Length: 308
Image 1 (cartoon, rainbow, N blue to C red):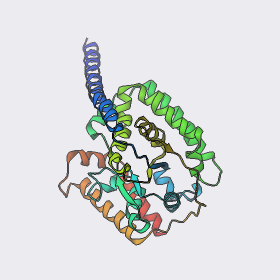
Image 2 (cartoon, helix red, strand yellow; image 1 turned 90 degrees about the vertical axis):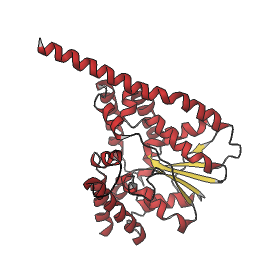
Image 3 (cartoon, one colour; image 1 turned 135 degrees about the horizontal axis):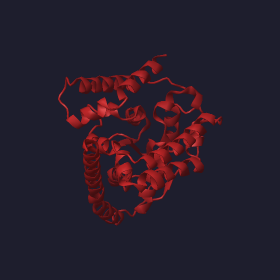
Image 4 (tube, helix red, strand yellow; image 1 turned 120 degrees about the horizontal axis):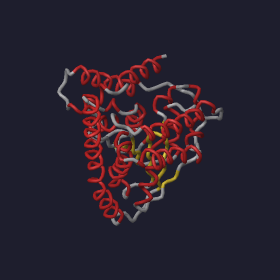
């Protein structure tokens, strides 16, 4: 009897959580539609827009021939006056900057030297809501996601071309990532939120960049490779054409990093450590994000690699 009652209670709780998460997702839909239709009317002068995928920690694996310096060279060759990167505006140059991919801070630090403006354009859902959705992640979605992830990673590991850049920007790879989020993760509101409200995140990325587009001639978005098809779709919904450029660099496998970038990474690591240890005032959401991620370990490893 107690076992049956327990199952009934768990089922009721699970149902309530699902309705709560679905409510969060659908509340944002009217705003999404309104924001797109409203913003689209404000942009007539169209800049040249390029989408460049990053591979985060894999930039430091020489076997992939796509180092952070190769990434920078690709950006430079596109001659942008604006680079939109994977840091939220509220974290940029503040305590949580190190929570975001190291190449974003790297590109920000190199902006003055290479005469482009770096725009922190990312957006993140709060940690508690995402964790709640992850706790009831649909099993069928998880299995389908795992199959696509395995296929993508298998392709990376077997790729023997000149640079991993060529693989992640190939139409087949871009299409695979697109199908993951359009047909699998995005097909269920719970999995969508568990993956960081993927569609809303990419919509916000574009929204955070819009005000810089009219005054720019060339804009480059540099985000994780999985973002490329969705950012492209969000831009095109507003009437902007976005191009995925061919590789413009010869792989150098050069991991030599300027001291100013290293100092910035060290500062970011120190701040994340203090947030984790709760020795500085910060939000509970930031604390949750830091302790539930591998950012401190990843940044520590990055700093060790660039010393060699």
